Image (cartoon, rainbow, N blue to C red; front, side, top):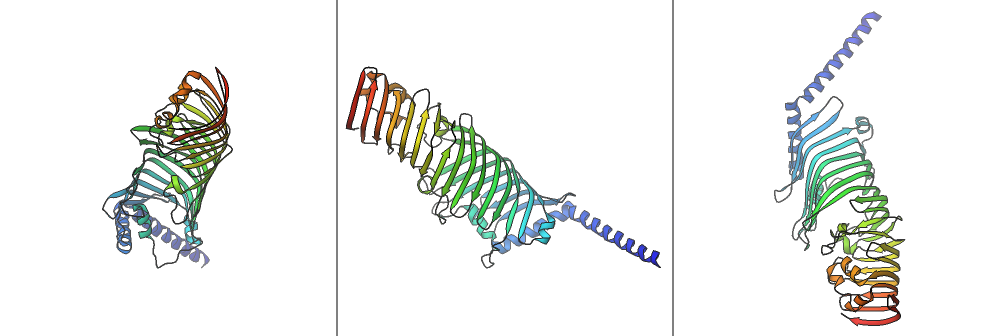
Length: 405
Protein backbone atom coordinates (compact mmCIF):
# COMPACT_ATOMS: atom_id res chain seq x y z
CA UNK A 1 0.00 0.00 0.00
CA UNK A 2 2.79 2.37 0.97
CA UNK A 3 4.75 1.41 -2.17
CA UNK A 4 1.70 2.17 -4.36
CA UNK A 5 1.25 5.53 -2.59
CA UNK A 6 4.86 6.55 -3.31
CA UNK A 7 4.52 5.36 -6.90
CA UNK A 8 1.46 7.61 -7.26
CA UNK A 9 3.39 10.56 -5.84
CA UNK A 10 6.27 9.89 -8.23
CA UNK A 11 3.92 9.65 -11.23
CA UNK A 12 2.24 12.93 -10.20
CA UNK A 13 5.62 14.67 -9.87
CA UNK A 14 6.73 13.32 -13.25
CA UNK A 15 3.46 14.51 -14.75
CA UNK A 16 3.90 18.00 -13.29
CA UNK A 17 7.50 18.14 -14.51
CA UNK A 18 6.43 16.98 -17.96
CA UNK A 19 3.75 19.69 -18.13
CA UNK A 20 6.25 22.31 -16.89
CA UNK A 21 8.82 21.30 -19.54
CA UNK A 22 6.08 21.26 -22.19
CA UNK A 23 4.86 24.72 -21.13
CA UNK A 24 8.42 26.05 -21.07
CA UNK A 25 9.05 24.58 -24.49
CA UNK A 26 5.86 26.11 -25.88
CA UNK A 27 6.67 29.52 -24.37
CA UNK A 28 10.14 29.39 -25.89
CA UNK A 29 8.76 28.61 -29.34
CA UNK A 30 9.38 31.73 -31.49
CA UNK A 31 5.84 31.80 -32.93
CA UNK A 32 4.25 31.55 -29.47
CA UNK A 33 6.52 34.27 -28.05
CA UNK A 34 5.88 36.54 -31.03
CA UNK A 35 2.13 36.12 -30.59
CA UNK A 36 2.41 36.86 -26.84
CA UNK A 37 4.45 40.01 -27.48
CA UNK A 38 2.01 41.14 -30.19
CA UNK A 39 -0.97 40.73 -27.84
CA UNK A 40 0.80 42.56 -24.99
CA UNK A 41 1.73 45.52 -27.18
CA UNK A 42 -1.74 45.58 -28.68
CA UNK A 43 -3.27 45.88 -25.21
CA UNK A 44 -0.78 48.59 -24.13
CA UNK A 45 -1.25 50.67 -27.26
CA UNK A 46 -5.06 50.43 -27.07
CA UNK A 47 -5.33 51.31 -23.37
CA UNK A 48 -2.62 53.95 -23.16
CA UNK A 49 -2.65 55.49 -26.66
CA UNK A 50 1.05 54.68 -26.91
CA UNK A 51 2.85 53.62 -30.08
CA UNK A 52 5.19 50.83 -29.05
CA UNK A 53 6.59 48.34 -31.54
CA UNK A 54 8.26 44.97 -30.98
CA UNK A 55 9.36 42.38 -33.53
CA UNK A 56 9.57 39.46 -31.13
CA UNK A 57 10.03 38.34 -27.53
CA UNK A 58 11.96 35.31 -26.31
CA UNK A 59 12.81 33.69 -22.98
CA UNK A 60 15.87 31.46 -22.75
CA UNK A 61 16.39 28.51 -20.39
CA UNK A 62 18.17 30.78 -17.91
CA UNK A 63 15.09 32.96 -17.54
CA UNK A 64 16.48 35.91 -19.49
CA UNK A 65 13.86 37.92 -21.36
CA UNK A 66 14.89 39.14 -24.82
CA UNK A 67 13.01 41.92 -26.61
CA UNK A 68 13.99 42.19 -30.27
CA UNK A 69 13.77 45.49 -32.19
CA UNK A 70 11.85 47.42 -29.56
CA UNK A 71 10.68 50.83 -30.76
CA UNK A 72 8.36 53.72 -30.00
CA UNK A 73 6.80 56.49 -32.09
CA UNK A 74 5.86 59.96 -30.90
CA UNK A 75 2.77 62.00 -31.73
CA UNK A 76 4.22 63.02 -35.12
CA UNK A 77 4.79 59.39 -36.12
CA UNK A 78 8.57 59.67 -35.74
CA UNK A 79 10.22 56.47 -34.50
CA UNK A 80 12.32 58.18 -31.84
CA UNK A 81 13.23 55.07 -29.81
CA UNK A 82 14.88 52.06 -31.45
CA UNK A 83 16.67 49.28 -29.58
CA UNK A 84 18.05 46.29 -31.45
CA UNK A 85 17.80 44.06 -28.38
CA UNK A 86 16.84 44.45 -24.74
CA UNK A 87 18.00 41.64 -22.47
CA UNK A 88 16.66 41.48 -18.91
CA UNK A 89 17.59 39.01 -16.18
CA UNK A 90 14.71 39.31 -13.72
CA UNK A 91 14.51 38.15 -10.12
CA UNK A 92 11.35 36.04 -10.37
CA UNK A 93 11.41 35.31 -6.63
CA UNK A 94 11.24 39.03 -5.80
CA UNK A 95 8.69 39.54 -8.56
CA UNK A 96 6.41 36.97 -6.90
CA UNK A 97 7.08 37.65 -3.21
CA UNK A 98 7.60 41.44 -3.34
CA UNK A 99 4.87 42.95 -5.46
CA UNK A 100 6.13 46.46 -4.74
CA UNK A 101 9.61 45.70 -6.13
CA UNK A 102 10.95 44.87 -9.58
CA UNK A 103 14.53 43.69 -9.30
CA UNK A 104 16.37 43.38 -12.58
CA UNK A 105 19.60 41.56 -11.87
CA UNK A 106 21.02 42.73 -15.17
CA UNK A 107 19.61 44.82 -18.03
CA UNK A 108 21.50 45.32 -21.29
CA UNK A 109 20.57 47.54 -24.22
CA UNK A 110 22.19 46.65 -27.55
CA UNK A 111 22.46 49.45 -30.13
CA UNK A 112 19.83 51.79 -28.61
CA UNK A 113 18.92 54.89 -30.59
CA UNK A 114 17.12 57.81 -28.94
CA UNK A 115 16.02 61.05 -30.56
CA UNK A 116 14.75 63.13 -27.66
CA UNK A 117 12.83 66.08 -29.13
CA UNK A 118 10.97 69.02 -27.62
CA UNK A 119 8.90 70.36 -30.50
CA UNK A 120 8.25 74.07 -31.11
CA UNK A 121 5.72 75.33 -28.57
CA UNK A 122 5.80 72.10 -26.53
CA UNK A 123 6.73 72.11 -22.84
CA UNK A 124 7.59 68.40 -22.66
CA UNK A 125 9.82 66.18 -24.77
CA UNK A 126 8.47 63.25 -26.78
CA UNK A 127 10.07 60.83 -24.29
CA UNK A 128 8.34 62.48 -21.32
CA UNK A 129 5.04 62.32 -23.17
CA UNK A 130 5.56 58.60 -23.86
CA UNK A 131 6.31 57.84 -20.21
CA UNK A 132 3.23 59.76 -19.10
CA UNK A 133 1.07 57.93 -21.67
CA UNK A 134 2.20 54.58 -20.25
CA UNK A 135 1.13 55.53 -16.72
CA UNK A 136 -2.47 55.25 -15.54
CA UNK A 137 -3.55 58.67 -14.16
CA UNK A 138 -6.52 57.06 -12.32
CA UNK A 139 -4.31 54.62 -10.47
CA UNK A 140 -2.41 55.92 -7.46
CA UNK A 141 1.31 55.40 -7.55
CA UNK A 142 2.70 52.92 -5.08
CA UNK A 143 5.02 55.01 -2.85
CA UNK A 144 6.94 51.88 -1.90
CA UNK A 145 7.59 50.65 -5.45
CA UNK A 146 11.29 50.02 -6.08
CA UNK A 147 13.04 49.36 -9.38
CA UNK A 148 16.64 48.19 -9.07
CA UNK A 149 19.44 46.40 -10.91
CA UNK A 150 22.55 46.78 -13.07
CA UNK A 151 22.49 48.30 -16.58
CA UNK A 152 24.81 48.01 -19.59
CA UNK A 153 24.56 49.99 -22.83
CA UNK A 154 26.36 48.90 -25.99
CA UNK A 155 26.96 51.08 -29.06
CA UNK A 156 24.22 53.63 -28.41
CA UNK A 157 23.26 56.72 -30.39
CA UNK A 158 21.42 59.76 -29.02
CA UNK A 159 20.33 63.18 -30.23
CA UNK A 160 18.71 65.81 -28.00
CA UNK A 161 16.88 68.63 -29.76
CA UNK A 162 14.84 71.50 -28.35
CA UNK A 163 13.22 73.60 -31.08
CA UNK A 164 12.26 76.25 -28.52
CA UNK A 165 15.89 77.33 -28.24
CA UNK A 166 18.14 79.09 -30.75
CA UNK A 167 20.86 76.44 -30.43
CA UNK A 168 18.32 73.63 -30.77
CA UNK A 169 20.80 70.75 -31.19
CA UNK A 170 21.92 70.19 -27.60
CA UNK A 171 23.54 66.78 -28.01
CA UNK A 172 24.59 64.61 -30.96
CA UNK A 173 26.32 61.54 -29.55
CA UNK A 174 27.27 58.11 -30.82
CA UNK A 175 29.39 55.13 -29.70
CA UNK A 176 27.70 55.29 -26.30
CA UNK A 177 28.84 52.62 -23.87
CA UNK A 178 27.83 52.46 -20.20
CA UNK A 179 28.37 50.24 -17.17
CA UNK A 180 25.96 51.21 -14.39
CA UNK A 181 25.77 49.29 -11.12
CA UNK A 182 23.36 49.34 -8.18
CA UNK A 183 20.75 51.37 -10.03
CA UNK A 184 17.72 52.03 -7.83
CA UNK A 185 14.54 54.03 -8.43
CA UNK A 186 11.93 54.66 -5.76
CA UNK A 187 9.32 57.37 -6.27
CA UNK A 188 11.32 60.29 -7.70
CA UNK A 189 14.57 59.27 -6.02
CA UNK A 190 17.23 57.66 -8.22
CA UNK A 191 20.64 56.41 -7.16
CA UNK A 192 23.32 54.59 -9.12
CA UNK A 193 27.02 53.94 -9.34
CA UNK A 194 28.24 54.79 -12.82
CA UNK A 195 31.44 52.84 -13.25
CA UNK A 196 32.04 53.80 -16.87
CA UNK A 197 30.27 55.99 -19.42
CA UNK A 198 31.85 56.96 -22.74
CA UNK A 199 30.68 58.44 -26.03
CA UNK A 200 31.69 60.54 -29.01
CA UNK A 201 29.89 63.85 -29.52
CA UNK A 202 29.75 66.18 -32.51
CA UNK A 203 29.13 69.94 -32.37
CA UNK A 204 30.30 73.00 -34.32
CA UNK A 205 31.73 70.58 -36.95
CA UNK A 206 34.12 69.18 -34.34
CA UNK A 207 34.45 65.72 -32.77
CA UNK A 208 34.68 65.40 -28.97
CA UNK A 209 35.79 62.07 -27.48
CA UNK A 210 34.35 61.60 -24.00
CA UNK A 211 36.58 58.76 -22.79
CA UNK A 212 35.22 58.14 -19.30
CA UNK A 213 32.74 59.42 -16.78
CA UNK A 214 32.51 57.87 -13.31
CA UNK A 215 30.43 58.94 -10.32
CA UNK A 216 28.08 57.99 -7.53
CA UNK A 217 24.78 59.56 -8.54
CA UNK A 218 21.84 60.64 -6.40
CA UNK A 219 18.84 62.45 -7.88
CA UNK A 220 15.47 63.53 -6.50
CA UNK A 221 12.88 66.13 -7.49
CA UNK A 222 15.08 69.14 -6.78
CA UNK A 223 18.72 68.05 -6.77
CA UNK A 224 21.38 65.99 -8.50
CA UNK A 225 24.56 64.99 -6.68
CA UNK A 226 27.67 63.58 -8.37
CA UNK A 227 30.03 62.29 -5.71
CA UNK A 228 33.65 61.42 -6.44
CA UNK A 229 33.17 62.10 -10.14
CA UNK A 230 35.80 61.66 -12.85
CA UNK A 231 35.63 63.24 -16.31
CA UNK A 232 38.27 62.20 -18.79
CA UNK A 233 38.86 63.15 -22.42
CA UNK A 234 42.02 63.28 -24.52
CA UNK A 235 43.12 66.46 -22.76
CA UNK A 236 40.84 66.79 -19.75
CA UNK A 237 41.08 65.01 -16.42
CA UNK A 238 38.70 66.44 -13.82
CA UNK A 239 37.72 64.90 -10.48
CA UNK A 240 35.80 66.15 -7.47
CA UNK A 241 32.23 66.59 -6.23
CA UNK A 242 29.26 68.38 -7.77
CA UNK A 243 25.80 69.30 -6.42
CA UNK A 244 23.02 70.70 -8.62
CA UNK A 245 19.82 72.28 -7.31
CA UNK A 246 16.84 73.15 -9.49
CA UNK A 247 13.15 73.98 -9.53
CA UNK A 248 11.16 70.69 -9.27
CA UNK A 249 8.71 71.96 -11.90
CA UNK A 250 11.41 72.85 -14.45
CA UNK A 251 13.97 70.16 -13.71
CA UNK A 252 17.24 70.55 -15.64
CA UNK A 253 15.71 72.65 -18.41
CA UNK A 254 17.60 75.85 -19.23
CA UNK A 255 20.58 74.32 -17.42
CA UNK A 256 23.08 77.12 -18.02
CA UNK A 257 20.91 79.94 -16.66
CA UNK A 258 18.69 78.44 -13.95
CA UNK A 259 20.34 75.36 -12.42
CA UNK A 260 22.40 76.25 -9.33
CA UNK A 261 25.64 74.37 -8.81
CA UNK A 262 28.19 73.84 -6.07
CA UNK A 263 31.43 72.13 -7.01
CA UNK A 264 34.94 71.53 -5.80
CA UNK A 265 37.76 70.05 -7.87
CA UNK A 266 40.59 67.88 -6.65
CA UNK A 267 44.07 69.31 -6.94
CA UNK A 268 45.78 68.45 -10.21
CA UNK A 269 42.59 68.59 -12.28
CA UNK A 270 43.28 69.53 -15.90
CA UNK A 271 40.91 70.83 -18.58
CA UNK A 272 41.59 70.94 -22.31
CA UNK A 273 40.67 74.23 -23.91
CA UNK A 274 39.58 72.27 -26.99
CA UNK A 275 36.82 70.69 -24.88
CA UNK A 276 35.64 74.16 -23.82
CA UNK A 277 34.89 74.95 -27.49
CA UNK A 278 31.87 72.67 -27.12
CA UNK A 279 30.33 75.49 -25.05
CA UNK A 280 32.36 78.44 -26.42
CA UNK A 281 32.63 77.83 -30.19
CA UNK A 282 34.88 80.82 -30.96
CA UNK A 283 37.59 79.55 -28.58
CA UNK A 284 39.57 77.87 -31.35
CA UNK A 285 42.47 76.71 -29.21
CA UNK A 286 44.09 73.37 -28.50
CA UNK A 287 45.91 74.15 -25.27
CA UNK A 288 45.78 72.37 -21.95
CA UNK A 289 45.19 74.36 -18.78
CA UNK A 290 45.68 73.06 -15.26
CA UNK A 291 42.89 74.46 -13.11
CA UNK A 292 41.71 74.11 -9.54
CA UNK A 293 39.44 75.97 -7.15
CA UNK A 294 38.21 75.55 -3.62
CA UNK A 295 34.55 76.20 -4.38
CA UNK A 296 32.31 77.04 -7.33
CA UNK A 297 28.74 78.30 -7.01
CA UNK A 298 26.02 79.97 -9.05
CA UNK A 299 24.92 78.91 -12.52
CA UNK A 300 27.04 77.81 -15.45
CA UNK A 301 26.48 81.17 -17.14
CA UNK A 302 26.99 83.25 -13.97
CA UNK A 303 29.70 81.48 -12.02
CA UNK A 304 31.42 82.46 -8.76
CA UNK A 305 34.81 80.82 -8.04
CA UNK A 306 36.90 80.93 -4.86
CA UNK A 307 40.64 80.30 -4.54
CA UNK A 308 40.88 79.88 -8.30
CA UNK A 309 44.08 78.80 -10.04
CA UNK A 310 44.77 78.34 -13.74
CA UNK A 311 48.08 77.69 -15.45
CA UNK A 312 49.21 76.96 -19.01
CA UNK A 313 52.23 77.62 -21.20
CA UNK A 314 50.87 81.09 -21.96
CA UNK A 315 50.00 82.35 -18.48
CA UNK A 316 49.60 81.76 -14.75
CA UNK A 317 46.55 83.11 -12.94
CA UNK A 318 45.54 83.11 -9.27
CA UNK A 319 42.46 84.77 -7.81
CA UNK A 320 40.89 84.84 -4.36
CA UNK A 321 37.52 85.47 -6.02
CA UNK A 322 36.63 85.25 -9.70
CA UNK A 323 33.16 85.99 -11.11
CA UNK A 324 32.26 85.05 -14.68
CA UNK A 325 29.01 86.50 -16.06
CA UNK A 326 27.30 85.67 -19.37
CA UNK A 327 30.24 83.43 -20.29
CA UNK A 328 28.13 81.45 -22.78
CA UNK A 329 26.96 84.61 -24.56
CA UNK A 330 29.81 85.83 -26.81
CA UNK A 331 30.10 89.61 -26.78
CA UNK A 332 28.15 89.92 -23.52
CA UNK A 333 30.70 88.38 -21.14
CA UNK A 334 31.83 90.06 -17.92
CA UNK A 335 34.84 89.15 -15.78
CA UNK A 336 35.30 90.45 -12.24
CA UNK A 337 38.11 89.46 -9.90
CA UNK A 338 39.40 90.24 -6.43
CA UNK A 339 43.11 89.89 -5.62
CA UNK A 340 43.95 88.77 -9.16
CA UNK A 341 47.55 87.60 -9.66
CA UNK A 342 48.37 87.24 -13.36
CA UNK A 343 51.70 86.54 -15.04
CA UNK A 344 51.72 86.64 -18.84
CA UNK A 345 52.32 88.86 -21.85
CA UNK A 346 50.06 90.72 -24.26
CA UNK A 347 50.98 88.33 -27.09
CA UNK A 348 50.36 85.20 -25.02
CA UNK A 349 47.02 86.40 -23.65
CA UNK A 350 45.82 87.46 -27.08
CA UNK A 351 46.81 84.06 -28.49
CA UNK A 352 45.14 82.18 -25.65
CA UNK A 353 41.77 83.91 -25.10
CA UNK A 354 38.67 83.65 -27.33
CA UNK A 355 38.72 86.19 -30.17
CA UNK A 356 35.90 88.38 -28.85
CA UNK A 357 37.61 88.61 -25.44
CA UNK A 358 41.14 88.95 -26.75
CA UNK A 359 40.30 91.92 -28.98
CA UNK A 360 39.31 93.91 -25.86
CA UNK A 361 42.84 93.81 -24.42
CA UNK A 362 44.41 97.22 -25.13
CA UNK A 363 47.46 97.18 -27.42
CA UNK A 364 49.18 99.63 -25.08
CA UNK A 365 50.43 96.56 -23.17
CA UNK A 366 52.31 95.19 -26.23
CA UNK A 367 55.70 96.93 -25.68
CA UNK A 368 55.96 95.86 -22.04
CA UNK A 369 56.69 92.18 -22.66
CA UNK A 370 56.13 89.92 -19.67
CA UNK A 371 53.64 91.47 -17.23
CA UNK A 372 52.91 90.67 -13.58
CA UNK A 373 49.52 92.05 -12.53
CA UNK A 374 48.38 92.02 -8.87
CA UNK A 375 45.07 93.61 -7.86
CA UNK A 376 41.39 93.89 -8.77
CA UNK A 377 40.05 93.70 -12.31
CA UNK A 378 36.77 94.14 -14.19
CA UNK A 379 36.03 93.68 -17.88
CA UNK A 380 32.82 93.80 -19.93
CA UNK A 381 31.90 94.74 -23.49
CA UNK A 382 32.19 98.49 -22.90
CA UNK A 383 34.89 99.09 -20.25
CA UNK A 384 37.92 97.86 -18.34
CA UNK A 385 38.43 98.81 -14.68
CA UNK A 386 41.75 98.18 -12.97
CA UNK A 387 43.07 98.79 -9.46
CA UNK A 388 46.41 97.02 -9.25
CA UNK A 389 50.17 97.07 -9.20
CA UNK A 390 51.77 96.16 -12.52
CA UNK A 391 55.38 95.04 -12.87
CA UNK A 392 56.92 94.79 -16.35
CA UNK A 393 60.34 94.52 -17.96
CA UNK A 394 60.42 98.33 -18.08
CA UNK A 395 59.50 98.96 -14.44
CA UNK A 396 56.44 98.99 -12.20
CA UNK A 397 53.47 101.26 -11.52
CA UNK A 398 50.29 101.50 -9.49
CA UNK A 399 47.32 101.56 -11.83
CA UNK A 400 43.88 102.83 -10.80
CA UNK A 401 42.02 103.48 -14.01
CA UNK A 402 38.89 102.97 -16.08
CA UNK A 403 38.98 102.77 -19.87
CA UNK A 404 36.13 102.58 -22.35
CA UNK A 405 36.43 99.96 -25.10
